[in-house]
Image (cartoon, rainbow, N blue to C red):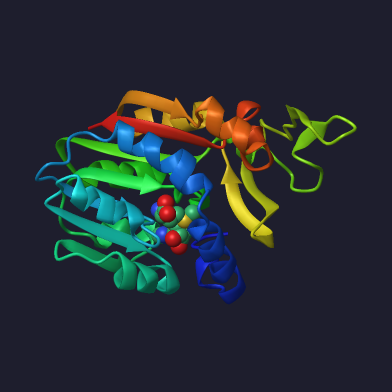
Length: 247
Ligand SMILES: C[S@@+](CC[C@H](N)C(=O)[O-])C[C@H]1O[C@@H](n2cnc3c(N)ncnc32)[C@H](O)[C@@H]1O
């Protein structure tokens, strides 16, 4: 698989939009608070948001003082939603795949990405391109699915459960084998790449980055306990991993 664009599939897009718009969703409850907490000071900074989707983060970065945000995404549908719902004078949305980053001729103070790098075939190559687009001392802050969460075959239940269905353990499948995985998420046959933790770290370092911070998804206990069905797995298995690195 290279350059997949499942977000422009009508059924996938509609289902994703519904999930993303629910009051309690993994993006707003888990991902966004952690990545915002890891951001450097954005005041007057030039920001590139890779896989910007519906533009919620781009808008947030403007509210945090960014001078400008360029949001790129492969999906026309996601960008159309972003332009309609998360526009500002200093946000530009552009249709561009992260595989084609070299088409961008300007440089940035902060490059960020939320949950889009699951779809990149060559993570190391992408990190090198991002390094080249950063100004001196620039930062990359990103989230993606956690290697423990992508070590899944999509066939068996992700959890070993008690007789009454309570999650006991998260199951890992072929953690050591990297590459494409097909699972059921939003639609059948959803594809993403699995990579081990050490591959992520080593490819960031090979690209030239200094890793400043790494986080794994977590949730306040009261939220997890009050929404056990939705968030009960978080205690067994981190869904997302986050890095902040410096050039
Ligand atoms: C899970 S969504 C996340 C959207 C947004 N960052 C957020 O956090 O709400 C993943 C996004 O990555 C985009 N994407 C997937 N493959 C891409 C590629 N090759 N180049 C650019 N964007 C891509 C999708 O179109 C989608 O908008």
